[in-house]
Image (cartoon, rainbow, N blue to C red):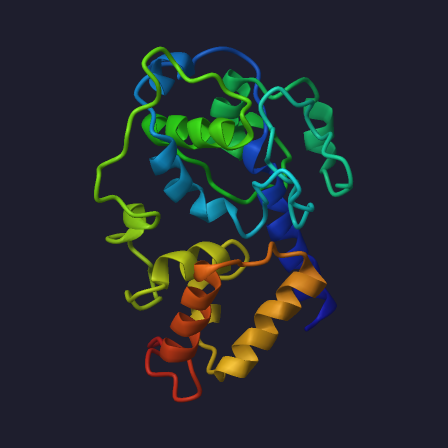
Length: 247
């Protein structure tokens, strides 16, 4: 891998670290306050929505920093203060302050707009309800958010962890089992075409994923999601490249 590509890859993934950055001010114009939206928020939906964050962040209490800082306990934490993480951008460090509900909500809406010069490449979550779901889940996971009176909203009874993504558009990647989690992890740093142009054996895909974790700080894919990704890539983008994209 060239030095330029390596630097570009690192820069893009550093962006993931800022996925929970802050913002000044109160409610966003035209939207209900984050406190009001939390009354109807669903942590279960938020967990599914957070799939796009997991290539760069951990969410467990003891998760080590990877491309981005661990997001466990983010609410109420000082900005750019995760112990053991030294990749914060100057813009993030200068943002300072503490991660409040309002700041996190504004940052998630548009990282680049909220923090000019941020290295976060994630475009944001424009839907106010989805942002509330993500924040609710993040707070529940670490016990840093008191549920509203009556508790958080329940998700649909038949909603699976990846249910949110079942009918999503995966661009050049073929729609099949495992597409959602693969798209979420891979396209943080790579275009869909780069992924789809590969033709690797299962063993080579395993080695590639290991390389991304060891050399570029990608958060490890764990549990059933790992098998989904490897099965998806080796089946649809194996040596015979059955889904090689047209020019």
